[in-house]
Length: 231
Image (cartoon, rainbow, N blue to C red; front, side, top):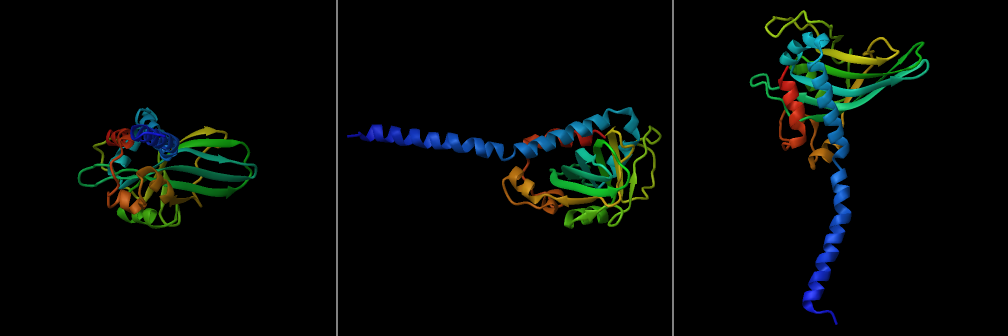
């Protein structure tokens, strides 16, 4: 017969074994999302430290939100398809503080004589409240729901310079591959609430994260938010 003490030890051991089996699954639940956040931080830091993108600083400093898409992939024969997953962060226009990141997916297509492939780290600066509200509310098409322009390279604009932002969205990209530019027409962006839930452990919309700021603070986002604050 099993004594009470032995029985308790057995039950505790069984419970610990069950937890050991379950914990890796729980731990892996946010790994994919944290990898996206970490890649976004690396992209922001690389743009921040690149003299060619010095002009970009004033755009980030005045943006209402920034959409960071690491590894925006485009490739195909005759039909080019863009796709990437990244994060959107909102900037408080009063304090300059950045929100927790909300996950987004971007995709689009273009037709033409295209060969090879391209990978672009891309940052989109959202320059007014109307554009960011459209981006948060539904599927958002660049060029249709908001005017968009490709950000110019160079160091001609500094932090103290007054700039008239004529477009709703500006796109900055570092291209790698045989394509010579970033195609924007017909490009869509859409919130990924499933990734938000997996990362924050509760159902949250992009609106709740970026505008309402009710998402719990996650230590893994601090590096990305600090990098943006350095612009």
